[in-house]
Length: 401
Image 1 (cartoon, helix red, strand yellow):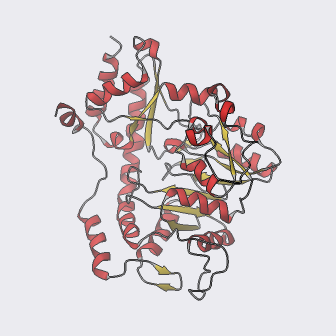
Image 2: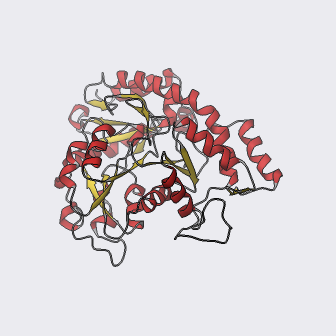
Image 3: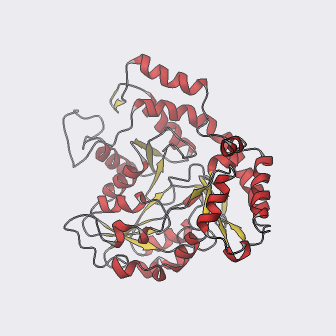
């Protein structure tokens, strides 16, 4: 009961109101529960959301899909990534960033991270490129952008495609561009904990007309826009988003700019306070970043400054005292599916930089060290009042005594 009472100090998530309820109710009452096709609309919410989200992310095209995982899969397939191709992926991310590569019958290659920004270390990318490399998936972890200008230069020099995993990066901006606009395509997630959410859902943005048409065809059973519904031109599957999710996202998107502004302002304040505690460091925004999605707020601690406390104990104490706290993503190289190579049958993974002894943490020193000392606060904590954040600061400070 004490923990629950203390958690009331922090903003709950999701945030919804009568406008969200009305948006969903209107879909139910309309009887139009799916979007239809580009040339023959049933509902209107998916088509309007695609326009509105593309506009918000400052992209030419948006294709709404069922979730962020299939968004990556569809983008890779549309870019021609397939059997045996290698795709370089950040090692510090949710499994979907790599499982989508596996689903395309390609081979993920894991890249270590920058110790300050926690995102892909672009300076290590060229050393991972082989004759089989066809694409790169930079992951904007916690909304923090990868150094995309440098990565684009590397990709162009080596004729590689880029799919930006922007699942955490709605609203993030790096050197003037919104996340998702630097590469060939950008993918997003609207899963329940995301800063823009409909419980599930995803989207792909791009600025190339031909690529947008290819992506649409793949996510809608191989159809082409404005053609006969039972004509299927390429291999495709059903990754479509439902009209319900489109309606809820349109309503939630109206709230997003205000929440986004608060998260950015609060994150600055929270970072300044926490970094004053000896032994605590927060994720440093990549230089050139002016807006961050702030899906998560990771911190790294030095156990020796807290009496040798373990990560597990540190995590437990925060949660027991009503401070919403989560573990971080385990590095991809450490996951059993990769260590034990329990993946696609018939695919040669022998040249990957993971699996069996190659998955030793010594081969991924930065991410392994960061993960061993890192916990994260959910994004909703940044929507809380400053006095609630001050309690977090005070409690972590008290652990040093």
